[in-house]
Length: 310
Length: 273
Image (cartoon, rainbow over all chains, first blue to last red; front, side, top):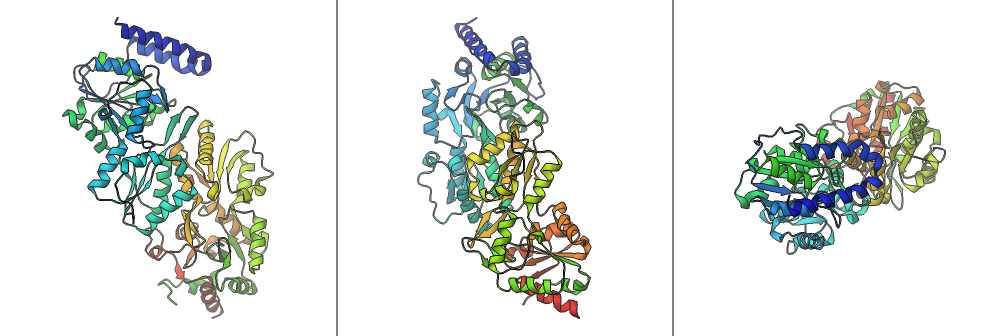
């Protein structure tokens, strides 16, 4: 057993014990079966095309809810990423984060002690900017001030698109009405959603994300939004383009059963659902076919990949 | 005056009861509510002819009592028992199903719910809360819903938008859709276009749907809703009406009129023939 694994296990046990104290009842029901299962054999529901070993080349990892929640790291995330670094697997962090610019996200991860490079992060904001530039759009931006940094230099006079990302401060009557009027006045302009996540995990609990507000606008103007981030296939494919590898040799780890796991599986990636972040009991039954594998957290997911997919 | 192809008014003599929408048909809402020209007189004329009449509104920014007071002040002749807004119907449903609501409604509507137990909520009720639709308040409603074993979501109306102070604003239906998407819970509508809501007003006049006509400015919720319920649905070109409504993909009204006054002119003229 390497020191790494030892430390990881030790860290796991300590934090798990604290967790037990707080949420004994919930754990009694849910946690023990998962823990046993993960320590004995981690294969749960393998129904992907990927053979049991020797095929994975790239691992895509979701950030919020999988690696961290707000500014707190998921307990096994540091060691899990270190373990992956010891393999020959390509790593990319794919995030639908639209609340902050890539730079500030990068800095926050650094502050949490993650050894991650800026160009390893693939965000839906970057993809959105690419899309806006390619199509010469002048979007009305419904974004946080911080996220707007990623759109510096993009014209927004006389808007010919409405672009929406997670911005709780602007998800209110006044700003939604403004966006609605632009869309209603110009029936041909696109409504672009950085993502359509239903909710996000915050330390205070689950909170509404971008999806519900995009849905409100879609309903008001009878128009479907274009999706930039996960689960859009183009987004997943773009994220692995640099590696020159196939979707079928890519594994996606995430806490959102639809946007991360189902989205990745649809294009032939191996989808692993982790039970951290926004995960709620029974999420694995919300998609058909179910996730290729279900793991308690990113640490167990990496263990699963190394054991079964390399 | 341009009237559409279907001669709805030729059936005037068969009509035994009329349902009127309020906002956008009787008056335009806003800082200074203004009657739509000819509407005060039109209501008077229908009443003078003895035609059973009810007002079917999705108004949830004020209590029924305050709404009636406001309309009377504007010069309309109507009484509280002729006006059917969603709140009283909603209270009836809550009592019937022993539900305790978490209310996300306009503060001015709260008196209509004062006799309803709101402790330890086991459902969420949305009204047209306007600027009370903040992120925090929507999030609270979301968190109540996901904490319930059997989540129930009600929306007093399913409208997309309406006109206020000369611009269009999002209506409660959009916020219902937002919470539906977030929670996977299907909202139940209390108000137009729900058939139960129209039927409540019709039953009060002892009139069957096939003998009634609904006049409104909302092509989907007034006109489409009434037609789905078996009534005729007449579209006025006032309030939230937009020219593109005349090519609506799913709803074809039984007729278009420029305003309520024109509807009543045609209706009464053909009735007297």
